Image 1 (cartoon, protein in one colour):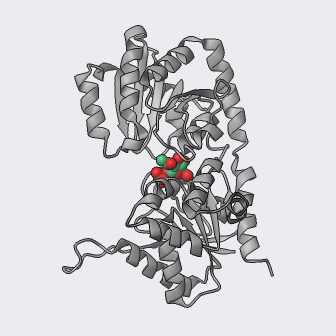
Image 2 (cartoon, rainbow, N blue to C red; image 1 turned 60 degrees about the vertical axis):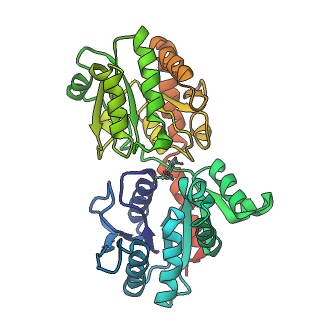
Image 3 (tube, helix red, strand yellow; image 1 turned 90 degrees about the horizontal axis):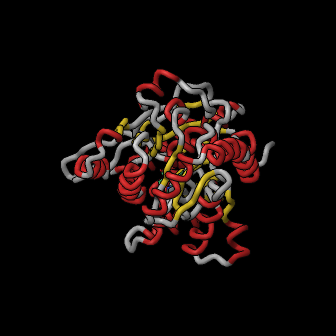
Length: 378
Ligand code: GMT
């Protein structure tokens, strides 16, 4: 099958899922045409994957580049040149709408559109007075919609005003997945010594530092933890709008000696393999891909009890959950897991076993079946 994929190139869950899915599909022999305004984070040269860059041009009349229209125009050209049978739009805005427009421009009405909703496309933009109608339009005109968790499916169905029976019919839940061969614990002792030179325990957080990630709650909780436990370091991976604020907080609270900022890292596996805990204190999270990545590396996860995180992390079994915003409870959970070796070992082993249920081998065929349902084999 030939599939055109629309995704964001920036570090972030939806782009990572799009690229991983492209890679898995390509390995299964499908021809994948990835359309994005920059080479997606984590995309490597692989057989059967073709990258089509969307040029974002400046023109004196336009105050900003016409990102959505440029995307639609580039995709229309790809439809004409490469004849994909399916367009897979990751993140409803603007990708599903760009796909609909491109299909019309190219006069390729037979091409099917699959939209995967990832999170804030629904929770933020779906309810936005200006863009909400566009999100709903994109989803309603898609030939199939998938959501990355049951929690996100419920939210999407509510946005579209679907009844329970329609919800299941219109929106398929296809969980995010993980390549278990690549994501496995392999400790690099040199890196471990760099991160924790005195053999400290390592608490890790990986995100794009948006306010929704509540990194500031983690800093407050970490300060509480440090009052009782000194042999611990906090490793922060990623970058984003709140990074400076977080760095300032770390300085003002006198935590700098215990906190390392590593910036964006293309390969999280060596880092996760050094971690004792991964913390995800998000206010909302439709799935929490990084939690799954950590679990695959046998790292227990402490997460806020919100949204799809409850479908990934089982409290007391593969990690610990705490009430959103409650940094006291987060500090207590970190203390518990870092001091109870038996509990930590049990949760770490169970985390890897749970991650195996989200293997690419199990999940990717659901996407493949969906494509074949829309475009039957000849
Ligand atoms: O929806 C977003 O916030 C952006 C998106 C991204 O591109 O990073 O993240 C979402 O999609 C990921 C992949 O499906 C999920 O693992 C994240 O939980 C989800 N983020 C939120 O719901 C906040």
